Image 1: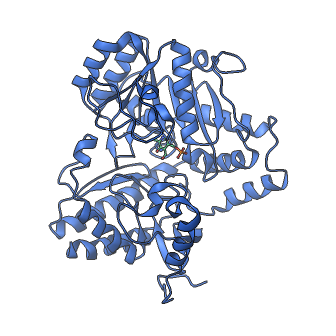
Image 2: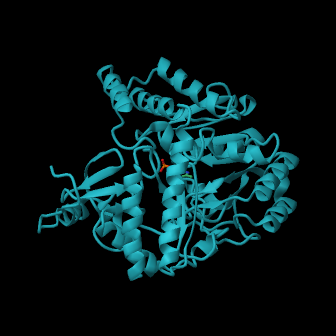
Image 3: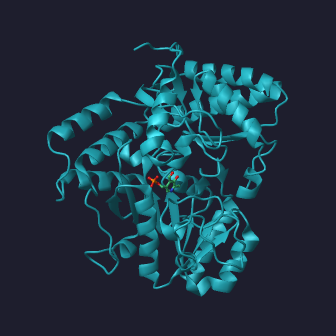
Length: 440
Ligand code: PLP
């Protein structure tokens, strides 16, 4: 296999694979955004990956800013993680009976996230978020909950609610196949809108099981919940007996070792969510996710309590080995300082390149997560994110792709830097972006 941006073949092997895939897999992909529908063109089929790079079917190399949509915080094929997984595999793939490694991983999570006193392991973020809602409903005996426009919490029915629903009306399903009755208890509010939040609690406070939020929303690119907004979310939940559920599937162990909640806790004394939903980094690229929180709430779960939740592959021994090795590596002193400074280097470089070319641009980052917008100012909510210039973003995306830089194929997705991204990778990315900005 060659190593650099060669892509010498005249036959597009990505296209060949895509054509084949489309005949037997809906849209040719197993998760919709991979199909490049938003940006057009042919999805890159990955052959292999190492460090900050992957190679497509044409053996063309890309600098990878998706990292499996967040999990690969150490880069691909980190030796300590590979070693842990290889050792685990030789001991068996799955038992359906408990293992010591599950306790070790639960303990590692609890040690890193102080608001979590007990944790349950599952296999995907969707499962974790869905279970957290069930737990919040079971623990409070209430049905309604609040989510925010532009926040994605996986594809469980009650969470797949049309963005843009107004305050007074409960949500409409975003997907066919979700009966309206199933989402009649899902109240969708605008992110960062204090007035709507106050009104929703004034109207429905006593009926609310929880507020579920992505504290730094990574599914409308990168939008932070403001500190006053988060503080009010916490206060209102406490006042009305609703639980605050942090969906840190993306931000957990990614924006900081203690997740986004550790950042809000610096600004809001005593701040803690009641339930946290985790995924991505805790599995290090294997199917693993979790939800955890206060002991009194978590003890509502079966087999202790009345809230049912289960999984054939939950706490899988290979996945837990991968997750544990990943958490060990990111817990090393200085890990997040270096990661955050590399990420800032990228973001600052992109900003400078865009400014030099007169392209309206704003960008933000926290730890190893970043977002940028072809907008002069950082948006505060989904509606503003969606005012971005889509065709222009698509030209930027393809310009970067041609130059061997792989960013998310949609303007409403965050990006991820790993510990394997070198200063040289970042410099190459900024130089590529500069060329593309000049032509935008
Ligand atoms: N919650 C958030 C914040 C996410 O970003 C995602 C996935 O991107 C999910 C939940 C769903 O996780 P999964 O794709 O593992 O089901």
